[in-house]
Length: 278
Image 1 (tube, rainbow, N blue to C red):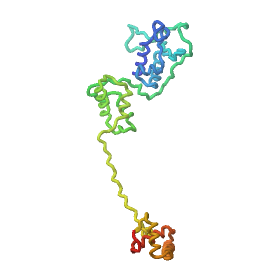
Image 2 (image 1 turned 60 degrees about the horizontal axis):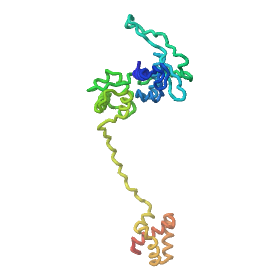
Image 3 (image 1 turned 60 degrees about the vertical axis):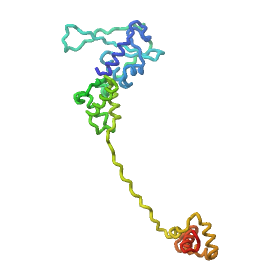
Image 4 (image 1 turned 135 degrees about the vertical axis):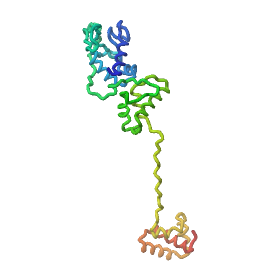
């Protein structure tokens, strides 16, 4: 029996009603919702289903609806009795099945748990880990394979399995825990991060300034763009409107430039020659 099944069985047996009043369950039944079972045992919903399936095979666990209370009724239909004269290695034989009177049952259709046969669930291993001083060798436990499977594809993939095992024990011992569920180990491994792992930053690539090769823009540089209106009026006064238009047209014709760019080039040349100020 797996650890998860043992925990569920213990919870159910400990809550069986022997007076027909406990939690409102009839005689011989335990009443729980699935979330209540998961919270009571500390298992996930999937682990609860696997455990119920296992108990159905071993002890004939059956489940029935419990009417408006939204709980389920659990009972064991197979009862095993030990024979004092039986040989130790003989299989236990089921004793007679106890039939519960129909009037003591509740209404509803029986809901046997689904039978999960082939599974890779961690419930194949004990679900409780004893926290030990020093941890010991993980390879002498069934948890080495679980750790190696859990760390695959995570930041802990390159970390040593024994190191993770010891770290898990140290963490729980520091918090004064003597036992820990298997799910905590899996979560610990998946969240573990390597220490002192510094990845060197790649040096920033030097970005060379773009070199301007446009002759029109180069000619316009000496004259600040923001003063273009003043440059135009000053140059028109200095050389005349006709000469100004001729210079602009010459730049347009020579360099196939738009009028505005040609004007800026004319302004730049005039500033360089000292005809007008910046």
